[in-house]
Length: 310
Ligand code: ASP
Image 1: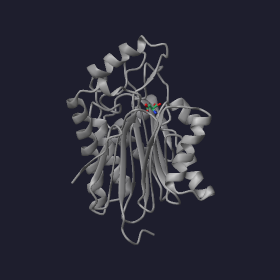
Image 2: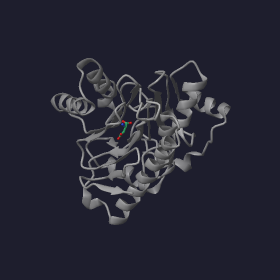
Image 3: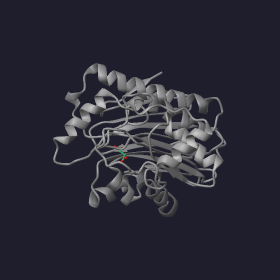
Image 4: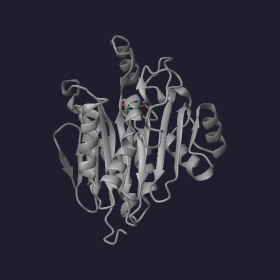
């Protein structure tokens, strides 16, 4: 039990290898603001005694609405110059999970994932079936153009000049522990730039990009989904804690060591546990990230620099 009523939320807005000199100070400020807004939105839910599930959904919705991040509005452009979104949410208390993949018209995919979890007998809905379910459930819909931004179109054009045909463009995620001691995780993404229509990444695959279990931790990943799926990295963090008695920090370190010896993908993983520890690991240049525990100041960072807000 969480007798001390500790609570914590951690979020990420994607990890990718971008050079710092491609960022203007204004861009850094805008990303920082976006992360800060999402983090504090989730933190308020927890501070007001709300459940971890509400906190991660609220934080991810803020990032989905922000066109800077690759989720919801501002999703990566696929090979048909369109966007498709994936999202998942998991409740660490009940081990219920919901996810959606390759959907096109839902303003907040994470909320559709939650509807799948709470109102159906299923875990995952995809494509037109998921969109039809969103319509029936009364979720906010938007036309394709809403999701497409000029910046992501430029990134798409640049990707076409590269030898590697797709590019990781980030993902957003949140993990939280509430005052009752319950954990939850949520992840949402537009996937890879220039991906094939219908391609599904790790984010909506429970155990790959998203996992929560009150026995150990809540986890959200970002990076090349094809690798994260094969590494089953979110569940691996859980398994190392549960079966190897590792701390959260040791488990994350071990996952990155295993990745370094095997799949060698670029990725970021955020995780929290029932002791209100938060770990934010990445092997890329930046990872937009932040966490806030209890009444402590928030930690926010993009690069190796770290800054705090009151
Ligand atoms: N993990 C996401 C995907 O493969 C992309 C990313 O995080 O960069 O869909």
